[in-house]
Image (cartoon, rainbow, N blue to C red; front, side):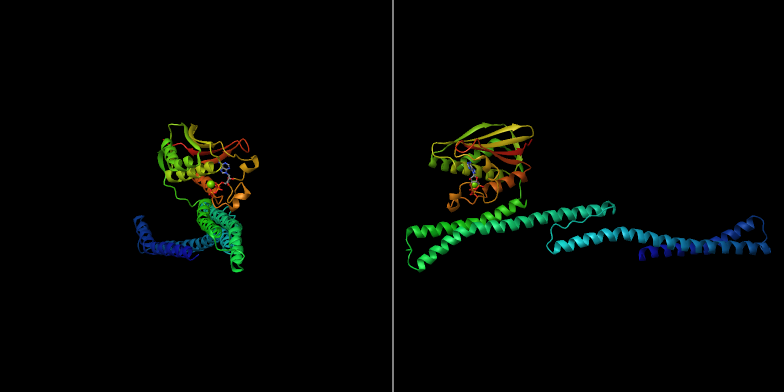
Length: 354
Ligand SMILES: Nc1ncnc2c1ncn2[C@@H]1O[C@H](COP(=O)(O)OP(=O)(O)OP(=O)(O)O)[C@@H](O)[C@H]1O
Ligand SMILES: [Mg+2]
């Protein structure tokens, strides 16, 4: 309003100054050139008429300009304040922990509409992160309960002298403490992955190199257990990916395959190209998965075998992280299995590089 007023006043002052200083001498000069005598009384009348006409026109212009300024201010302020009030209310709601709050801004112009869109996208991300945090806290509490309860029971037993501090007790303590320590690491890794905060250092890498590196890294574990690890068909292709992260996914898939394949079994690592994607495949001849397990293996802390809960080896987050890494690359991680006892095939699809 003040800005509009300043513009109106500046316009009127300029117009009045021009009309007062330049208009009358110019008019007077033209009247003389038109043949009117400088002493004629008509000249004074005509000049007075000119001055009055100028004054009236300026006064009318001032009133109309002020009215227009008021109208425009009212309209523009209305268009700005309504959506801003909606955005402020939504921000307050979010501040109080309601991450479902969204700002609906209509007919406010493209700038405010895109501000509202950005706000809503931010609210969505915060809501997802909050939901992940809540679920994670629940899952972690659940995961911690078993080792903590075991340790507490043994401590009671030691206090009451019904349990002796011997080798089995010491190794039970160690494995449960290690399990809790690994849980802490996994927790932070999985929350970073699920919130999409993974940093990717992409480069154009040869698929063969990825497979060979992955194989090299796990070779000794396979030969120790007596499981054959073969490099099958390998497409002569490249992918745009972070080689370290892809290596992490392959290492997890191979560790799983090794864990779930009995001695004498076989794991085949291969790569094929089809359309715009390259598929890296880890196929094992091991335990396999029931059809209903296929939908759960990527869930956080899911472990197929309930007895494995007390097994110090896995937290059940490897595939969750692997899937998040695949998605961060614009790819997918999928699993198929013909059924229990018939092996499993995990496929990491990545966009093809040049
Ligand atoms: N190749 C496989 N064959 C059969 N079951 C598998 C295979 N890979 C994974 N699974 C099942 O999926 C579950 C989840 O795997 P995931 O890698 O997420 O966790 P994990 O291996 O148990 O623990 P970690 O967090 O150490 O990886 C496993 O516990 C297992 O039941
Ligand atoms: Mg695993």
